Image 1: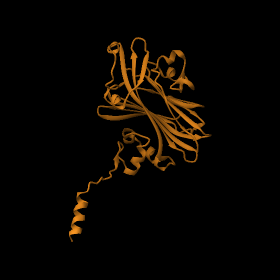
Image 2: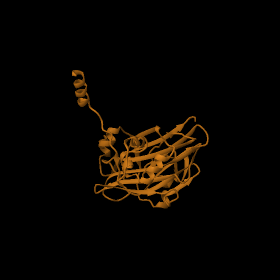
Image 3: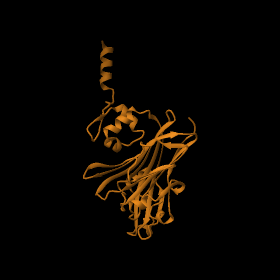
Image 4: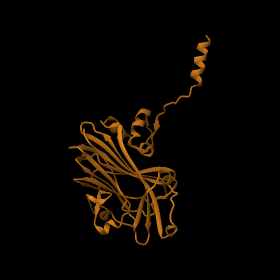
Length: 282
């Protein structure tokens, strides 16, 4: 009898975790197991704002959520407001989150503007020679962009082929305490689909925002190995129109090894470095 009481007390006192569903902005709930899978490709804001139709499509697809490659860099940009010239440096996650980055005295003036963002590329393990990628830029809430124009986000691929119709983009922001999204379609006016990849121009909202992220994603067919994907995000440091922002080719000689503008247009952007991942074999 004493043993039974002991084990009952032990069970009651043991700490345990209650698995709860993840509630989304559209009002549907994502079971904990599926939420953990999605977390390997998306952050909480993206999952929270995910349309139900997209969620169903993802969960019914052959995407291998449990085996995902990922690379992340945190970048601080210091731009001369008079010339538009920018210096980019990699910083720590803590510096990115707090916005506390040491600046030499000459740069501590109104002549310079600063911003910080992370660039994260994720790629799933292939299934039947098809993989899925996500590319994110999330701005530090403490160092949001001052110039709001057409930023460009793109990928360059080698031995991959974009599965047409699956490529998409999203701009997510928070204003007045509410998250909102702008979606970019596979064949919309803001996308440039090319043989070596694609790019999407996103007109950064002018609202009074406290959060900003941009992303592109899609399925990739592997034609041979090794297969490689490069990701780039270029922030406009001056005001540009949509046509100018789309005047690029996908090229290894481009900004971030992806977006090749003319020398004139190139100077309209901050020239942040890119990132890449590869699949060596099937």
